[in-house]
View 1: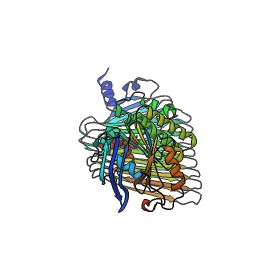
View 2 (view 1 turned 180 degrees about the vertical axis):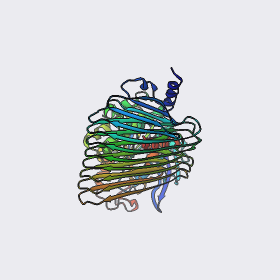
View 3 (view 1 turned 90 degrees about the vertical axis):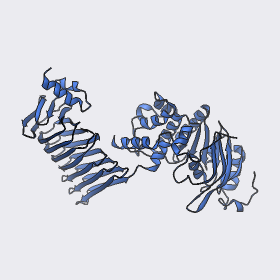
View 4 (view 1 turned 135 degrees about the vertical axis):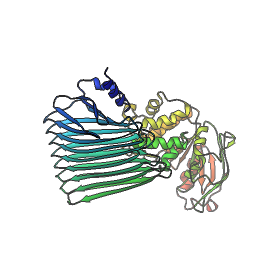
Length: 312
Length: 249
């Protein structure tokens, strides 16, 4: 096995994933360490072009019309050393009547002074589906700043489902900024699950614009903030077309000296649209806690179980 | 002396005396019912025994197996074998039924198969329920049965069940009553907090609570009659000093 392949597998396995999937010829993958491409495998209908930059990579992903990628594409980004910058410019275009799922792992296990910046432009073609699951695994020192931004356009009948998860290790600082525009009959679903501790700082800005008739959207944020962590969630859902439907949901649990705020904006500009929101911020619910304690769990165990459930 | 002995228990909430020098013994291995009208102090009585927050500042004592548990927090009382089923069970966003029940089963060191067994006993198919969340997607009856499954998994020595028939249909009620049979068979002592005659009839022995005092006690038939004839038509439900009938000791 080449050194590069070995390094690629080591990076991949820091994501707690089975690297054997990278040997499957039907599974497209891309493994990038800092600004170096360690592995790239494509499948028919899917084009992935990568250009190495000084501080990251530029990615162009194209999925041809009518292509259904059967097995999820595995993306792995990371920096193993303690310091560094990784900037990822992504340009994604999904053709018509196509479908793809991507599992993206971002791993920074030793971060002391790292920046991970992603800037994406995504267009999902008519009647296509784009599923994107991004999991971050960080080290314990909190020396990392993560800035994922994305502008997404959903064409008629397109479906965009994304989940962002940062539950392992310290968050450091994270600034998520996603803006999605949904045309006629499109569906957007965005979910963020983040667990902050120490002096972590979490800021989520998700905006959904339901501009086409019958477009639908759900923005969900689930945050646990402990110790001196701070979390801010600004979710906006704007409905400007008839028969659009949407929901904004934010649930934050705070513990110790943590601070959390949620500012949902529901903006309805057509009387035939319907958008709702729900926000709950506070400590662990007393009845939940006392129920588990009445089954023999101590308080800390019960709190962890409740938080893990919320973030699951 | 019973498994649970309450001595001169008095508790006030917001300046109102809810439990008033209440003394009572609950014998081990029996199903007891505590009945009484709304506001009699039944739920407060259960919460105080469990040691819930807001119900810890009381006069008198609570003895479990002969030892005071007055100063023990909830989890330590639970580790002695005491547990509580709520009138309206908690909902947990995202927490799986499997993990909820397993947490209770851990009390016995029994984790293998405990979830499936407990769900089966409550008439719930594990394949359909174990991976669902204990949240608002479950009906009230389903949550009630899942809570009872967690109690069965714990195999407690003493179970306090607050209004076990609340919010459930006839079919679910049969499952709840079956669970009482399981609990009794495993040697648990059960205290049913209820104002339902149907639930009262499941008990071996009953107590009538009014204005925070034990007003009468005895076999179910006696308390049932008393409850039907007096409490349901009584205008003085929570003022025993003015109760217009003879008080039986």
